[in-house]
Image 1 (cartoon, rainbow, N blue to C red):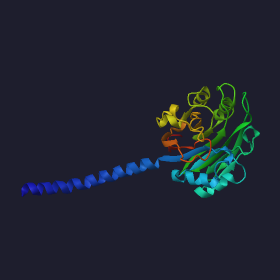
Image 2 (image 1 turned 90 degrees about the horizontal axis):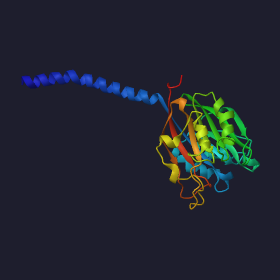
Image 3 (image 1 turned 90 degrees about the vertical axis):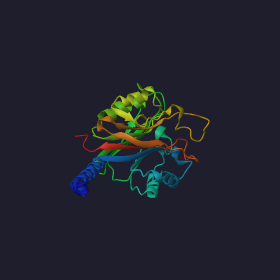
Image 4 (image 1 turned 180 degrees about the horizontal axis):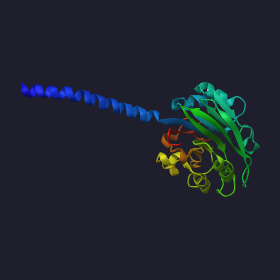
Length: 274
């Protein structure tokens, strides 16, 4: 009986201590979650909307619970807003420069949170089509501010062309603590043009996901026999201390464009950037 009494006494002593430790553990887990903001983004070249309505594209994106989307080769007018109505995303910015001056090849941004400081950068150069452009907007998501770019540029060697203009005239001058760049780059991850972007302190989400994209493609979704490689990408600046925690090329049974949509979830530590 004495041994049992001692065990009961010890249990009474340690149970409150264990309860406190468990509570502290839960607090630290919750605190860690609060100190990291997960941002879900997507990019889609919609080929001027000829293969699907904006409502169909909105329905396709619903399962991904996105915060912000960058479109390229998108129609002007209320097209992006119509996608937003399906997704419950009310804030849009539509650029005014149509790629190569073709009809309905604008770059647009659709966001769940308000957009400010909207701007479009014209990109000209190289021997390919002109003009290209990138649209930019700033938004605040769950306590952190992010600059977001959506672009459409031509392929190049990274020294002369749209990627070079993007690096020299846009990305190298970006002052935001956290920024994301998405779009149709018309270059694969191993190309010099992508190296030029990475050299500005950007990181491509495929790398974080440990995804071997050499045997995959984002173009041409309408011609499965043709592998145009992965030419649509999502980047974030490394100074943000962000990390991609999820993402993929979205494979659709019925393609809605000649490109495949892509998405990523990027986790940004709140206090990592002063």
